[in-house]
Image (cartoon, rainbow, N blue to C red; front, side, top):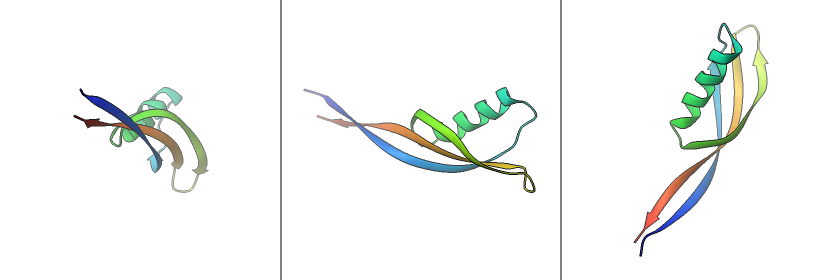
Amino acid sequence: MNLTAMTTHFITAEINLQESPLKLKKEIEAELEKQGEPLRWAITEVDTEKQTAHIEGIVTTADSHK
């Protein structure tokens, strides 16, 4: 019998600001997908001098057990 357990992880990231909100959303999701499947995320801070956004998110990963 194969069982799949889901593990959640808290992720932080720094993303360069993009020209449009749609490009920013895609960039954030791509960065979080490197760590797992994004469940939710939020922009928690914007640094206008560095032109970066600080992101906090929750991702899940699958742990397969036989």
